[in-house]
Length: 403
Ligand code: CAA
Image (cartoon, rainbow, N blue to C red; front, side, top):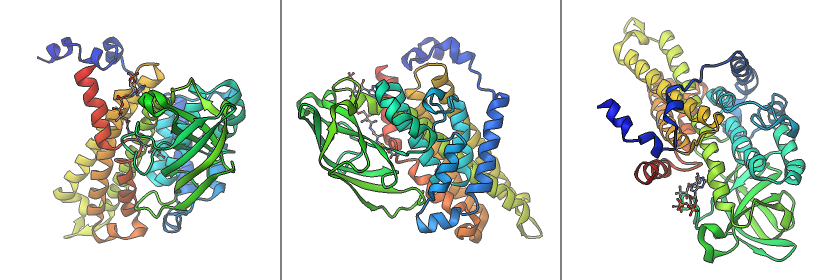
């Protein structure tokens, strides 16, 4: 029965090569472990101390962004010739997990800068665009933002109302973008806009917009449930003149650019969700070994012990999907479905297991100093941004049904 299931070329449908699937190997190298340990050390020593304050005040100091840049976290997979760290996607998810265990606001900055901005520029930008923008982004000297969502176009990404009219030497950009991560602090914005409505998704382009361009306004910061240290803004473009050379790729490539970029982004967010869940689990385990009730540490009560067993199992299952998606990307295989599955599952685990972590903490779980309430609030966004869980199911189910 099991063999028969394989014989109906399920994996061909999903664009995986079956023989590569069976020899899948993502055991960590010495280098991976060093990178993971460096990220863990940074998270413990630099991110943990101010994390509650940053969440309360909705701020993230530039000094910390600079330090992440110095450690190579802002351009993890970028070629060293453009200032990047030249690491693989496995390293990226290890870093994302460790940062997210402590501060998901820090990790979303890392994820957007790496997956959506640096990757997009490195994979599809011209040499001149890479020279001008990528190096500063990969070193963390500059920060990037990815601007696809609009008031009326979040999941339905082809319905872009932002327009970019071809004026010869430049495009005239008009419109509004919503929920933009790094919106207030970015230097470089990759903006998706419609250039020819009659062409549907083929009439969409991606542009590089710089902070300070005339007509580009940054709206007020959103007051959010979670990832409050990370700034999220509405952006306004009023007759912004974007030079022709700032278009990314061939005319009409913008929608595919966004989709391809988001596929990798979803690995980053899946790793973020994994880290949030793992962080909550580690806190819950520790707490359950210290807190006493009915004459013993609460971990000795089966009600708590079984929760811990379920949490650990779910988190490990999520980790396997995240690592598999990262590994496929590193192998040069198609990872669209794997990244959608990893994000769908890891974000569900993050949401469910952070709720359990709060429950294990009891009354203390509801108090900020115990951290788990923040992790629970932070978990929710992983089911929403870079494609909601429902969008991931569309991506997965279309591949299953239509190949
Ligand atoms: N790679 C390359 N091409 C792709 C692709 C991919 N992963 N996915 C789709 N395409 C192509 C299709 O092949 C098709 O091209 P052809 O017509 O040439 O074959 C074209 O794109 C259109 O595809 P669909 O017909 O599937 O498009 P659709 O309108 O049905 O939408 C969707 C598909 C998957 C639902 C898509 O709209 C989607 O992913 N929506 C969610 C968008 C999203 O993730 N938004 C989050 C905002 S960004 C964010 O959160 C950033 C932040 O700040 C953190």
